[in-house]
Length: 93
Image (cartoon, rainbow, N blue to C red; front, side):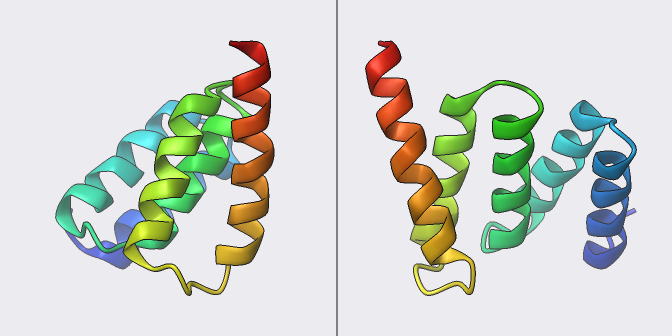
């Protein structure tokens, strides 16, 4: 139950089958066990952004992921998404 790869695969399976809340719970468990896991933060952020309509949660997770590893292979794309999200949230406020 605490095997990182198995938990990540289960989180992805939940995500791909539309069980977004369960997927988020699994990604949160991964992050608690391994705070340096950028993939879990980014994936959870994308779920919040695309499926759970919570841009604030997505922004928080994207920022955390970028602070853990600013040179991550997806960092540039995440920064662009983050910029758009922050502008959208600011306009809505």
